[in-house]
Image: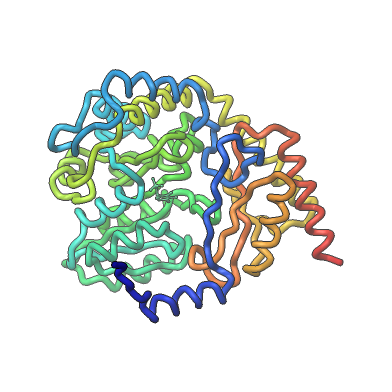
Length: 385
Ligand SMILES: *Cc1c(COP(=O)(O)O)cnc(C)c1O
């Protein structure tokens, strides 16, 4: 007997609307022997495929197991997790760090643990979805200020009832735009209004700062940025995330962040591979130099072609095409030329601001960047005729 369950009309309607708007998403399986040159990933230093990470991961899996077996508070917190937390605290110049399974969960857990209805959260309009969702799930009073607009933030902060607490939240590097938050400016607002400041440096960690310590890094200690979030799945090449800060913050998260408490600890192999990644980042600053060189080469070439670059100095170099259909066509054509780029459309970005999200990596060769620019040049010429 089969149980026939009709798909509800209101859900079918949502799907139809998404199709109609040109924003239906499809996954494509990336073959293991990938022929495309990747300009879409967040693997900015090329570490995800570094054999030293894979070897560290395999060795730890053999010694400690493929999985950690339990949550951190039960029996899943292994020595390799402890060592990684210490290394991440050192990298970011903070007293302590706490591992989470993903960046999404780190943001949900932190906001949920810090917020209640007496906390007002102020978010940059372009913040990552996990920050927006986290404040909403926490039941906090959430306000969004105009992107990178400290005057708008100050205006909102002045309206807060004096007895209530404020938490200012911003991406460090904006994931779809590539620009860097004005951390000193945000910190000044936080001091002035006696607010906490939380920075999610998912795309800055490993890439920015003299030691790869990110856009917040050691120069902005926990007296300025009380809550620092970093992810391990981007430049560090593995998976997972952490929150760094002082003792009071970390102890509070261990007690009250439900996405920390009620989930299995990262596999020990992932922690070991991340420790290996931190060694590479420390020992091979030439990777960051190579990346900076590639970013500059791409921008120079794209500017010459008259491509719609955005004001970004980071590996995230979007081309703001605007139209949803055009973004899809260009991404498909680039794919046919052997180049993978991200096609970013609503709801990830506002309508009419669809873009190709091009990301540079330290492992791109000059001929890779040349091939990308050549293909983009052809598309430009066609669009003009
Ligand atoms: C990618 C990203 C996250 C989510 O991290 P995951 O580890 O992939 O879940 C959080 N914040 C920002 C700004 C990101 O770009």
